Image 1 (tube, rainbow, N blue to C red):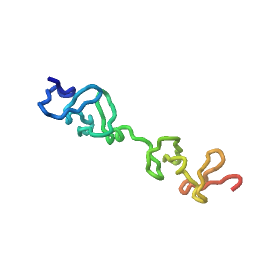
Image 2 (cartoon, helix red, strand yellow):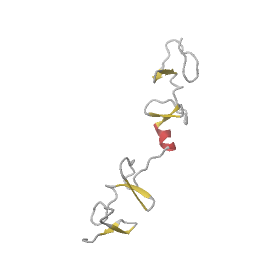
Image 3 (cartoon, rainbow, N blue to C red):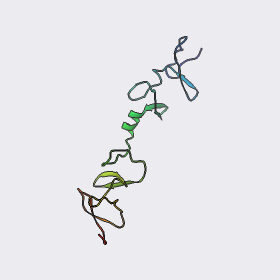
Image 4 (tube, rainbow, N blue to C red):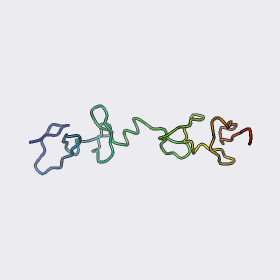
Length: 118
């Protein structure tokens, strides 16, 4: 008779079994180490245990764009303590993407730019 990897109790006849990486768990034992909720979707390995997606984000927050609030997965622009996607870090007049080498920021609140040919 097989036993749960987490609690080492046997599985009652006809009960549901969650299987991952060759190991068997009661559904309630295959749970997030932080919130203790059963893992039913995306999860992350953590110290020989698992974190649900929500708890993983709380422990290891990813940078979010200050303009669109989406997670930044590519190059990040940091300005005045905030992070931005390159495409979101725009000049207000006109809507041009700021280029680090060619433009000089002259107003932190509105992201105005000044270039030699402006």
